[in-house]
Image 1 (cartoon, rainbow over the protein chains, first blue to last red):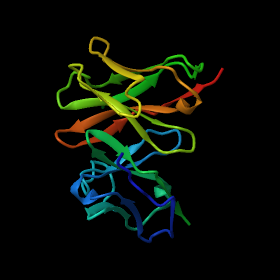
Image 2: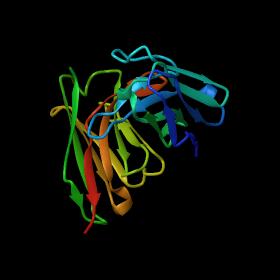
Image 3: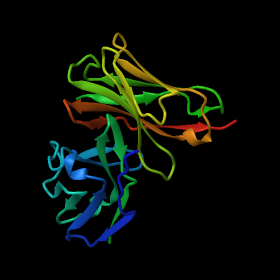
Length: 106
Length: 121
């Protein structure tokens, strides 16, 4: 089965740029979405189709996908961005999620 | 605005069937262009897609759960439901329902808050 690999954790200082990677075989040939679940809240779609931002998502969130790696980039990271982030792609009509990355803003 | 709300028992015994319902408000499950998914997250673990349904009844399930899962839709109640049979402790998780949008590629653009289901005797 298809697998997506994310680093367990990423740390960033407030105001700096955070990059969260997601790796998978020929991932660049697929569309990747990114989700932000927070405890007790509905998970939020922050990036879809590799680089598109849904309405209401701040411009500081951006995404890219090439080769075997997709990247979620958060520019000017704020304390409110501290959360888990999951990448997701489709393979053989099955939705696959990465293992998740905990973003710490310190 | 469209909202999704999960409901169902918070405790299920091993070997029994887990049954959850997602009620859609502010919109219709019969809206073309949307699929309706179930996704779960075991405590301390990552997200796992369970499957989706279209209002016509077309379904697609995660192969890892396909033998135990049934997703159904009730357009008259504007709801869709999950049945997971023969549960074990490994099925303990927060279960989310989510709207699934797209044509050839899909994303989960709207989620419920989730409901914790514990499998224990």
